[in-house]
Image (cartoon, rainbow, N blue to C red; front, side):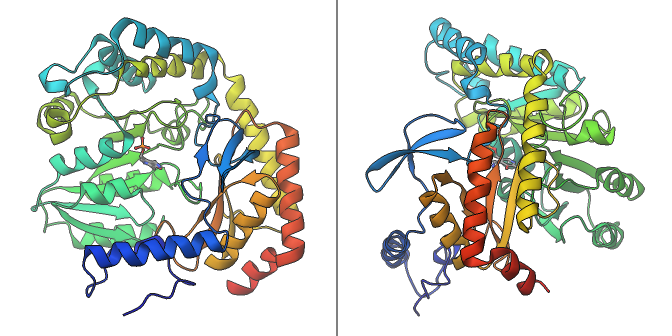
Length: 424
Ligand code: PMP
């Protein structure tokens, strides 16, 4: 068996039945060489400057500044002086690490404060919040302990991979992205077959930046006696009148059974959280493997507590972000590029063909713009795109430079036309 490098993506090397791990590593190593040689390696580049809207990046041993759209630091809080100061104070007071898992000595005052902060951010009580060291484990570890082989997870096919990982011990059914009919069909047909039915969706989806039909899904979940978990990693800090996210916008903040999220995007740090009923929270705190066997986040997470406060204290960052999103999206659409259904800071330029997408990524680098070409398995094979995350700290000149780059590339590669042809 041989793999066609021109059409392959990373996932194709995960399991090749006739190759053992050494053979798979060898052929993948050759594939990396192929990607580098054709300039399609926008991945794992070395950043010398932090999550800024302009990043100094090392490409083939040359360090240059690029306008960057690869960071989910939407409000720019990783660089906010007050957030940095709070993180520094955490390190000065407590040192650099927490030294243990929360259950056996790694739960500190600052972790407790963070639980208080994030629960009250959502209008809940501290007993209703559990924090994790990443957003990934907030999802995967919580689901692993909640759902067993008698239960079923009903999952929108576009949810984050951490949700799928959390469902390895239970039954799963996925429904086409945002399809209410398909969801209802699964709920109806699984009604008496499973002990617990948990529907899992995102507030804002990470590759398209589009929103869930939250109210309709909530109504279906109630109708069929199921539970609802919403991961709003990309909506919090951005959507809603006070920045509480997609659930605030849908009026459901106090209604869904589980809210999950991350501290690594809007809040500019590391970690994740689950908000749920207090008894459920206690169960997760004492039963989840990660809470028992994996170390808690370091004292620098004291920066998160400040970042949460800043969502209320400095709403101008959210306003600036929306100004940038609207300006940028309109500029791309005026060129004829397809940005899908985004209604968040995630702005995709949908291209379709993975090779052309790789070429666009490479040409953007040539124009001084750093983006992520997104291929299968993050999206369907025919749905490759350039994914960009707009930040409050992008200046008009950064957005204009990027729009000019897209216009130039579109004149050369006719990506707007190609996308329309492919999907006609
Ligand atoms: N959920 C979603 C929707 C995400 O996009 C991500 C990260 N990309 C995560 C969870 C995981 O968060 P973290 O980076 O904090 O592990």
